[in-house]
Image (cartoon, rainbow, N blue to C red; front, side, top):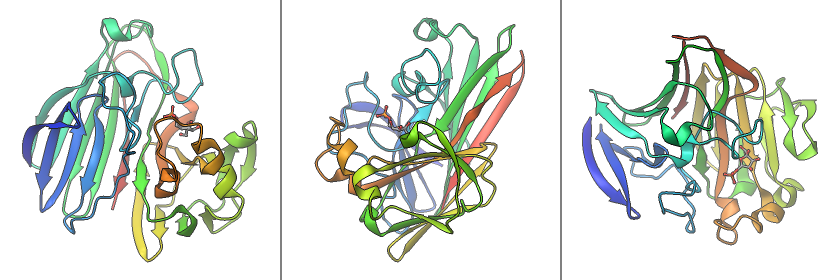
Length: 277
Ligand code: TA6
């Protein structure tokens, strides 16, 4: 793995390269902000108006959500991991490791932990593994996700396969529980206006994102849930760091542990993996 410290939109980042592919990981949030496979095509979406001020969450790439998904707790939305600086821990042959440990900045969540993001790269695949270890003396519970923004040509031509038969919480309907009956989730019709925000449970099949003629396999291990989000036209106008019509250029397909918090006893570890490509 080639590793090069760079500045990306003014913030510190690490550029990784291997087998003709590359990825850029901002230390702010250990957020993967670019993934170009060996065919030269960028697969991740980052908004034109994304803020790179070292404070705000970056709109796009792969935000690491930990220790709280959304507003399921008392912490700020989606927890603190995406807005803190992680440490580059080093690289091996096929992956680079980033680390976040509890310190004064995480003291409002009174638990001792180490979170690690392992970023693996090959010609056609990006493998992201989130590990959490309880280094304290009391158990804690957390929710987490890899909030992956996948770049698409036009959301109206996108379909996501692999969720048929899964139950999901429909966040746009107050968390109503439904079952996915469709072979593929599409983003056309009323969804273009209203958006889609669902937390699918017990996802076992590999997912396949189809964007016109292009396909991207999306797999997950260790994460039981998959979150599917596109804000649609209506909500997008209220998201300050999204340029007009940019909502058409991405879909979030997130691997998460959301509906049932994970509990770690002292000394225990957990790992969830999302594989793109
Ligand atoms: O994962 C979907 C979601 O929780 C949506 O409800 C939406 O709010 C999105 O994340 C983005 O949240 P953010 O805080 O980054 O604007």
